[in-house]
Image (cartoon, rainbow, N blue to C red; front, side, top):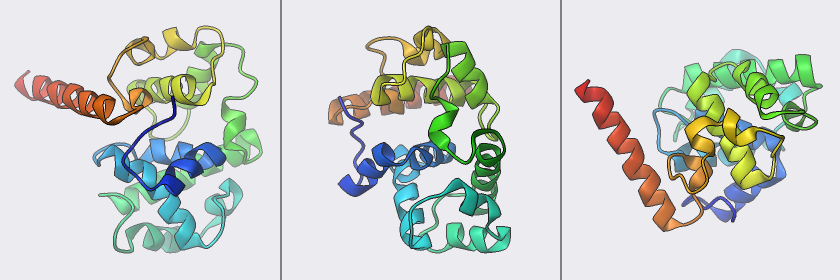
Length: 189
């Protein structure tokens, strides 16, 4: 089933049509609502006036790119830090994958290799990398051998823990409940 966030249909379609948009959405998916994170690539494309391209973003003047991120409504709660992180990730894509975000996950032999590649991106700690591997496997058909194991608890069948599991309004509500419970547990310990 396709990803079902409460965002514009065009923003969702962009996640399927442009692998860089999907990656940028995942980069931004922290400290803001999921729907904001995954709709921001669509807004970024509108602000740039053309399709998202890793070469172009990596080469953008950092101050100008920050301004694009910070322009109201800002693309993230922390626009400067995240503009920088997106540019850094695009530079990694240019340096290692010819600027092709999909090359990050195409041709991998194993879930472990996919997790390693994703983990090497700026801003991707273990948990975020595992969630992205789960998102790729569950929603985008990227399923090298061992992908579920590499994704850890986020790869489990029927788990409702992350954006990877959102296919309708009910699953969105359950993922939000899970995230709130995890935050409450972290605060109490």
